Image 1: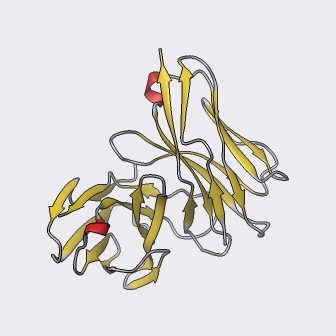
Image 2 (image 1 turned 90 degrees about the vertical axis):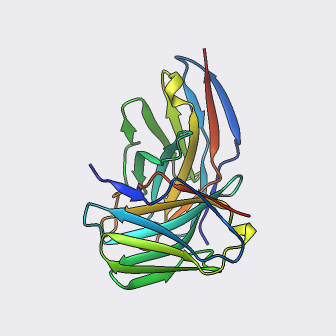
Length: 114
Length: 115
């Protein structure tokens, strides 16, 4: 079974702090994704990586950056956390190529910025 | 731009009854894929079913089936014989035609199964 793990289930940070959210997958997937989920808005793509050291902005990249130094690990960075970044963050991974291959999701990190 | 619309913010269904969750999509590309995911209160997204735009038959996976009406651009999820464990948030998503592996999600439908 594919396993996607996220470093924290719950996180509380203060405004202005630098925040790291870590995601690890064990299936050698090429593609990894970071989403945020907010009530009434569904999931919105923040960043996407299709290979080591390769990244692409999603729909809402402002205020975020990412790092992918190893294939299995994709980190989301909030350079200076703000209260409007309080949200649920979901990481996903997928094998490369088109077609019906699904994205596999981690359990999510609920981030509260005070 | 691609768009997914789920017009039902919440639904109730009685145990053992069937329920349909609506999903409409908007794209001008002939090649696309549609997914349904379930998100229980624990937060993890669980893949349920996939339909490709060129698939001739509606997708089925156990108690889940996808009512794909291409001309109407709808991809409704049908859950037969509902169980209490089906209570969750359900998301419809579309693989972006030229977006590689990126997905566009709807806003979700909260399903509550009652005794």
